Image (cartoon, rainbow, N blue to C red; front, side, top):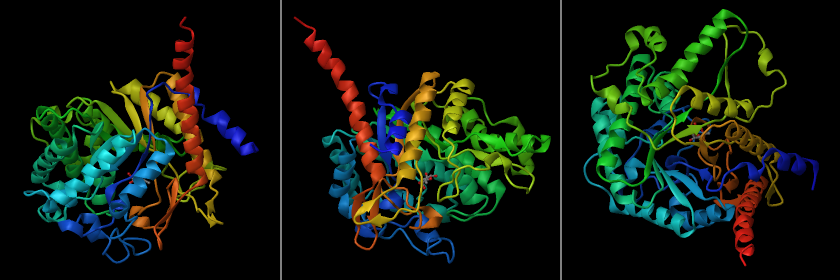
Amino acid sequence: MNALDIHLLHDAAPEHFPDGFVWGVATSAFQIEGAARADGKGASIWDRFCRVPGAIADGSTGDVACDHVHRLEEDLNLIATLGVNAYRFSVSWPRVQPGGRGAWIERGLAFYDRLVDGLLSRGVQPYLTLNHWDLPVELQDAGGWAGRDTVHRFVDYAVGVAARLGDRVSAITTHNEPWVIATLGHETGEFAPGVRNRQVAMQVAHHLLLSHGLALQAMRDAGCPARLGIILNLAPIVPASSSEEDAALARLEDGRLVRWYMDPLFGRGYPADVWAHLGADVPCVHESDLAAIAAPMDYLGVNYYSRMVVGAGSGPDQLRAGAEFTEMGWEVYPAGLTELLLRLQRDYPVPPIVVTENGAAFADEMVDGRVRDPARTSYLARHIRAIADALVLGAPVAGYMVWSLIDNFEWTRGYTKRFGLVHVDYATQRRTLKDSGCWYRDFLVRCRALAQPAACAGSKSRP
Ligand code: FCB
């Protein structure tokens, strides 16, 4: 055992986690599926955005991606190899209901049947996300998330998917990271659909929340037995200096990233400071909307990658001097995950929290058929340890999922950033488990081993 292994064993200890803890890996449809126009699948706003010159770093598309649709069995076997007890995936709306309204495509639905049944037969709980950003283009052309009609289309889609798969999946999440859709998709325009208008962005955020609440209610009314929730990207926001100006900026950013979503989801309406700051850009909110948004959730998904440091000055960032950064330029800051989980528990009446994404991109190299990626292993081990710390301090954490199962299409970075536990050679679609994947697999073996002896000891003690 080398020094790094000893360090890791110390960092992430299986005995800190209760039996039944959810251990998973996550992906999303657009990033891995490929088969972009197969079997009558429609186009999504990301299919279109990839064609905008300069939008994607390497000029790539999701047309083939990891060819997951055609390699389902192989990928299911990879999931089983890791020994996780949960797998998070998303349904591509245009694959099952092209255009986002009307007829359903049986072959699209049948693909997700095979995925769900394949997981269950391997002892893996399916965690389904309804919207991981790939809105049908026809709905975008009819107003997209800025229009109220899309809210109703989404509710119909949610009920349709729940009717087909809801009896077999453990959990259904409405949206993945509404802040990203609203802010990066409609305010800065970096992401699809590439709109740059703050007023539109805030209306989009409101419609995403509203559609979440209405969909939860509709799925429950239809008798869906799965646990229902939403996934937010959250982070501690830290002022870059001790100036009052930076403190105010940090408070506002916290309002826009955390409280703008958490407050209405937990029945408090929109935060007054952000509302005042937005001026004429506040969204149009109908009378019953806030009650709908606050529909009770069975679990909350939280995606965590790093903390956010904000400041008005342009000088060097003293706070992060000497810090580690991933290939995305994101600071490695595991303590932020503990802080965040404790803060959510302190400030809100949260249901069980599942960390639905956490992981890192590094410049992996395949040498002699092997990817040695100790930096990723160390990142994961330290974040798992951060969750153990939060659990000890009383945060209601029920699960953890690594982003991602396999290298995939990383949005505007195309295929240039690799987050997978499994390496993908895009020329051949060959999959290779990285060292970090082996480490996660072995860590989960130890978790299971710990769960076993208690039962054995119990039966041995009987006369
Ligand atoms: C999250 C996204 C996920 C992936 C990771 C790196 O914001 O939900 O699809 O791109 O970032």
